[in-house]
Image (cartoon, rainbow, N blue to C red):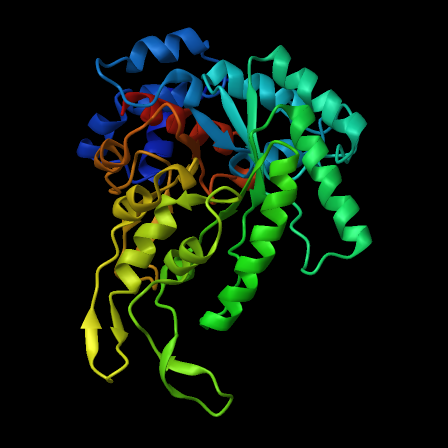
Length: 373
């Protein structure tokens, strides 16, 4: 396992995270939590962050494995620390996580189980490791076939449904938007596809979900004069994913809101050109969108951002709890924590060869903040 960093090393990490006094207070445990690395017993971390009236039940505290993808994929023969699914599960359970969301089923070839566990046998092995560590799978960013289905793609999709059931997951999905198009006609095609795939998933007892990025909450082009290709150039004011929710069956199609990208959309997409050519303002409200569709948002990515007006997105990704996205208010508004599954995610967690322990350190920091809400 890793050696815990010294206080000087922890202070350097805190500076690298840009933790100011306000953020350190919000973190509850400050630099001491970071210094614990991945060796502090889960009970110690839980005792440190306990607050009355917390909203996120212990059993709902999850992480997407993309956050620690470097640890999952590295060679255990070349690194003295958690490597591969088995050891990463052990590390995450010690930190205090109870749920994981997969980002594929591959790891380093030298890790127990071999390079790919995308099979019935591999799923059974993964399930054993999950059970051994008191973890539950909730979903996977995996294979979503083209539409209409080919026989080969249908068999592959059904294999992924079988894997999800072996893992004990309730959901199966993807990390991509249903379509990157701005046009209503393409979203209608996407809706047909997702309704069809959702029916197949439902027959397997699973909920099919799609994950959002910022552009999926930009305004749909569905009206006004046509361009040279015959596509509409103006908007009625409905956003792309809001339209997708309207034209898909709530029994079969669900969403995972990435709260960071939803806030980027709030920053970037405030105006649209109405059918009459006027410019109109409409500021996106992520929590209101969740409430309007309620049970269709069973999963969230809890990803944090620090405002930065020098970048196009308006935010830099930072460890969960060290930014300024108000998750306390967001989760208070959306409510129903018994049916919500927030997964800590940080795209930038891996530290490379210079900081190989970083992604698990940031995973620990994320759990502490999730539990302290």
